[in-house]
Length: 373
Image (cartoon, rainbow, N blue to C red; front, top):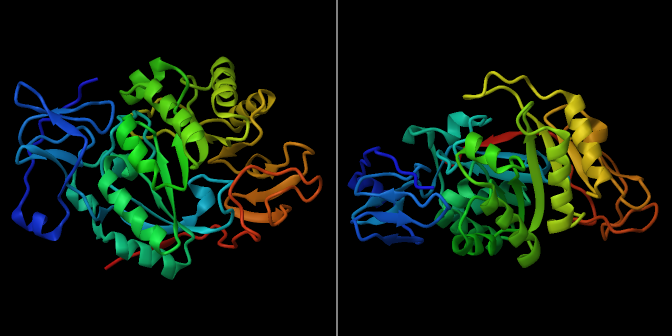
């Protein structure tokens, strides 16, 4: 799908001097004088002064540049379970940050004020990769998470942040829709330790109508992550009443997860609330989440969770072999913890899939905003 914008790009010399606009890779020139961005499957074709649909990549001086390097909509220390990641360093704090723009056009976007923003003043916080790594260490964060599509549309920044974090012993997390081309995908995920990927539905019709994208590149990303990388992977599907919550679709989705990715990939079903352009749909009933969870468990997915609702049972982790509760969760707060230091069930000794340490973190449900300057 070709996507372009007609927004004029107004770049001042001061922005170059501050280093927020940097050259990028993954683009080429076309015979008609345009350049085509090859970062994601949209393949935006740009003339001088135009931005891509993502807003942050633009054509300037006959090249594609990233216009938001080092700029963020904010930094905050969260529980890792909020990403959501339930099998990656449970209970630990993660330093999270996002940016304006997005390479999808979801009608139901739950953080549209940031992802759909076309205003640079949304990006009020600035930080170099080294400053982010230092802030993570100072706050006790075990990882840094790129949210709101930073890891894809802000690839150069994400890679540099990851290098700085790894140098300080801090791990990296990508929260992404997975809509990216193969070559930049390989570059990105070489630097990522864990990812939560939005599998927004399991039909091409939904992806095309509701996100203005396509499902196959996302499925390709998921298969690539599971089969060709060591990235710890979890999936999230936001269930929207009447659009992607039928039993048939949930059955097909969860069967595909087991067949293509394996039974150990955790699957999160989360509740929708009316927002952005999709205000005519009701919030997701808890019963829908429970039904989705039952279908997925019945199809062999070993770890299935409910989210955006208060459901301690649906938020807790159980041993797939004996059924014992391994990690009790009430929202983002951990209770009972019955994993051995090597991540095995204390009751039967079967290994729980994930990345665990000898002891869980105790960050709890706190949210700690951080200002870099």
